[in-house]
Image (cartoon, rainbow, N blue to C red; front, top):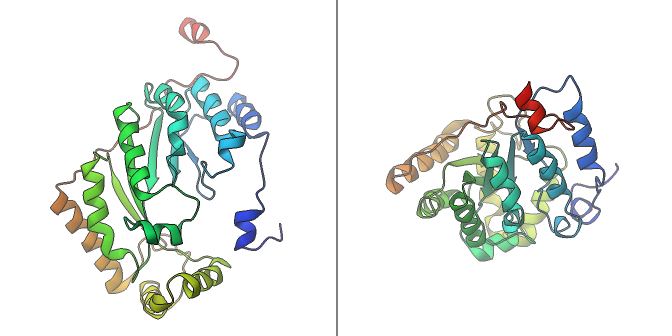
Length: 266
């Protein structure tokens, strides 16, 4: 679209107003095979504009009617606005929510993720979802070596305290123009840590800032990759955390326009 990966990404929002209608049309196709859908791998489904437009909610209404499973990942406690729909989906093993927690330091969180819910609000949202019967867990990410990597054990303990179903982590990736945006961010937000972060990141990526190689993108290489894994394992051990995996189901799927009675008669 010719937009930059910096402020344009935050300020020039492209709205898919017909998303729910197009989703329903896709689910209605004879060729559609029910499968878990992810909301979302690129843009947070509960960014500030969602409160006004409700596009994520409209899509969840479609998915709930059709009982098509969905996986939500977000940095915002706004997911609680759709607790009713997620509960409905969860009754059919069709919903799970992952809250991304990058740091427990509220000051650092404001620098890293402005206009998102505080770390405490995210943990509380995860707790409320689990209490409502919606499986929810934590994603520690992005893990930035030299900045928030040492917080991994503390975040795992915080997740255990609010009964997270799972805790995973994902290291920082800098594809394309994002690398320059990240450099600029460090200059303004954490200038004293910039050199250390860059040195460790390059070591983690085999001398580069990023790699798209399958199997290595989210794992890295070398001693820093092992260090992150060790911190994660140690954190789980100290917190007594044991993952409670869930399996989403597609067996209850109802195509758009087909009633539950018709499904039973079939």
